[in-house]
Image (cartoon, rainbow, N blue to C red; front, side, top):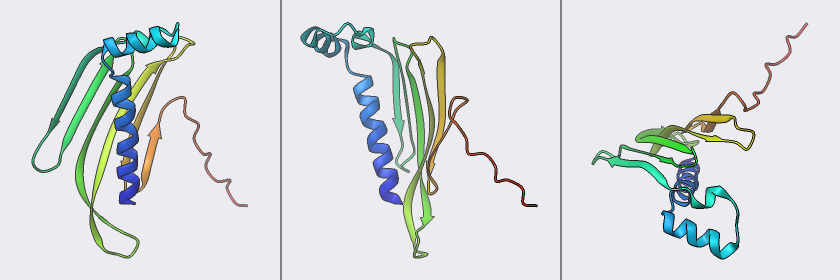
Amino acid sequence: MFKFFVATFAVLSVIAYSSAMPQQQAAAAASSSGSSNPDASATVVTSSFSDDAAGNFAYNYEISNQIKFDTKGSPKQITDADGKQQQGEIQQGSYSFVAPDGQTYTVEWIADENGFQPKGAHIPTIPPPAASA
C-alpha cells in the first residue's frame, strides 16, 4: 500500500510540475509545435511550498488559466496486510479547473491506507446496495 502512496505522490508531482512550467518554456513549446492552445502560454500566478523536519508538507499553486491545486501531507503509521507497522503517508488536497464548457470543476481528495479517494459534484458515486426483501 505504501507503494501506492508513493506512486500517487509521484503522479501528482509530475502534474504539478508540468502545469507550473515557466512562461518562457510554455511559449517556446507552443511556438515550436504550432499550437493555438491558450493553456500553452499559461503562467504561474502564485505558488508556495513548506515542509518541516517531522515530514509534514504543504504546497499549492494557481495558474493564470484558472487551474488551482493544493495539497498537504504528513507521515502516518499504518498496519500492512501482515499486521506489521510501517511508516506511511497521508495526503489530502484539492484541484480545480475551468472546462471548455465554462464550468469550474473541483475535486477534493485524500490518499491514505485506503487508496486515492476523489470527491466532486461531477464525479459519479456508487449507488447504495438495494435493500433485500
